[in-house]
Amino acid sequence: MSLDEVTNTEPAWNVVLDTEPISKDPDDPFIVHKTTKRDVYNNARERTRCDWHATNDQPFDVILWNKHKHVTETSIANIAIRCVEGEKYRWKTPKLECGLLPGVFRAFLLLHNQDLIEDVITVDELKDAQKRGDPIVCFNSVRKLYKVNLLDN
Image (cartoon, rainbow, N blue to C red):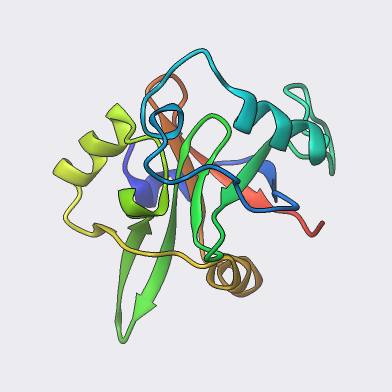
C-alpha cells in the first residue's frame, strides 16, 4: 500500500500530541536505537492517557516533539504528513536530527517513494495539516502504513 492509498482507508487511529517536549538529547542512544528502555515513550503515553484498545475519541498513540517544537515520532511509529506545494504535493517525515528512531520501514519508504522527503515538521504545521484535512500517516515494520487523526488535547 502506498502513502496515498492509505489515506483512503478507514478508520483512522486517534493520536494526540504529548503535553511536554521529549526531555532527552536527540543524540541519546535510547532515542536513536531501538531498545527495551522505553521510559520516554511510556511516560508520554501515561501523560496523555493513550490506550492500546482505544475506542471513539480516546487516543491510541502519542506524538512526541522536541524542545524546538519539531515533531519527532510516536511512541510506536514514525510519522509523515502530506503538504501541498503549489499544484503538487509532497509527503514529509521528520529529519533524524529532530531526535527519532530511524525506523526500518521509514528507510524503506524513503527509498521507494520519491514524493516522501525528510524535513522538519513543526507542531503548528501538524495541527494546521489536521485542520485543512491533509492526511497524516504513521508507519512501522509491524503495522506498516496506517492513517491517523490528531485529536485536540
